[in-house]
Amino acid sequence: MRSEKAMKSAACALHRFGQAPGFRIGPPAVWRILCHIGAALFLVTATLTSSAQSVPARGTPVVVTARIEGLIMPPTRDYIAHALRRAEDTGAQCLLVQINTPGGQAEAMRGIAQLFLNARVPIVAYVAPDGAQAASAGAIVALAANILAMAPATNIGAAHPVLMTGGDIPGDMKTKMVNDMAAFSRALAEKRKKSPQIAEQFVRNSISLSASEALKDHIADLIAPSRSFLLQTINGRRVETAAGPVTLHTNGARQEAEEPSWIQALLMVLLNPNVALILGAVALYGIIAEIQHPGAIVPGVAGSIALILSLYAMSVLSVNAAGVALILLAFLLFGIDLYAPTHGVLTVGGIASFIVGALMIFNDAQTGVQVSLVVVVSLALVTALFFGTILAALVRARRRPPGSGPETLIGQSGVARTNLDPNGLVFCDGAFWKAINVGAEPVRAGDAVRVVARDGLTLRVQRAEAHQPEPVYVQQELTQ
Image 1 (cartoon, rainbow, N blue to C red):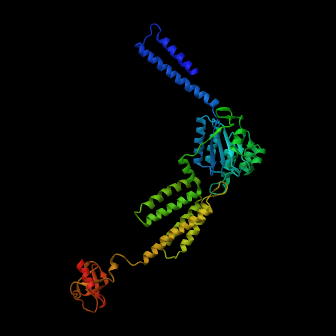
Image 2: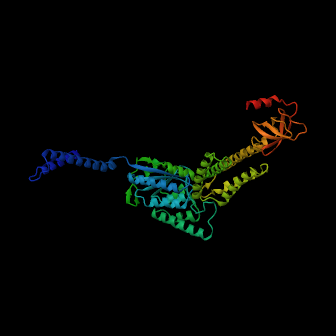
């Protein structure tokens, strides 16, 4: 109704303005058309403005949801940034991030925490489902949220910084990193009105709290068995964002899940230590197969692609140098065993070296950066089968008599075309050869001969045994 009245008022005003004395633009028909166009544009603008202002008021509130699962890595930060951008652009009530992580990179963790601190919409961290954890870097990320909720039977803490290679940080560097991380954790707790002492102990003493303990020690804001319960409980709460204070209206909100893009999902998969190890092994398989069969192309291309992806993953995961050295030693032993007569001794040593190296290359109990034992053993067996197949093929090839070349003429039969006194001409293996009779018996034209040696383009022959059928060689000569 208001839009219709506004259009009529605008049309009347424009019409009166066009009829004012001394004001004329073109013929009256043109002016009437312009008046109607102006009124229509005014109506459209008023309608859109009214709709945009009225939708949030009477529409269903929206909550954008995201997940942090597995290791916190750079692709995780990009994914959360995209989800936060969607929540801000769509005017969502909040961004609800479900957390279940053993930790991850400090740089990626700090990046996500900064996103939460500078968000223009409220951030709700939810450690779930039952049995989940927000450990190490995950605990710091959870502290950065406006509201921290935990499902029953979950835990949070153990944020002491360690090397991703599995060892402790040496000397002064350890003190520096611990102090820096402890100060950051304490600052987040103070910002979000949580216990700064407990937050600092997460880093300095690696303490870990259950959901009930976290609620009691003023780390968690509530325990929520489900998302619907969580959204119903936080409805009406007032939180501080980068855009100012916001009151949450989440009761009955519609949840819109933000999923990682295909490239983000791919990078997250590549940064799985099991996948990184498999790609490294595939790269070596392909390169070795290309060396064994030059020009095959497919093994070389596949191996090169796998090598690049594996190197990317290892550069992010910060691998253990000793583990890499042992894996390379294993493949070196496999390669030597292909050409050295060790009867598989080096292959056994290579398998042992591969297993130990694979277990060492990613091994960090604090962050979960480690390779599954099942994957390691399976890869070791596949590698042994791969090189065992190549070794067996080489042995068979070495034992097989030559199929071409000068050696193939030795022992073959032919027919003398001229008398060999002792030199002459013979027909053998589909061609004419100069020949020398080295036997005790004379050789006449048409006699069957047998090759006993070769000197360049000259064959050394002798008269064949009497039981060998001469007509066979005569027929062979005629067919040529």
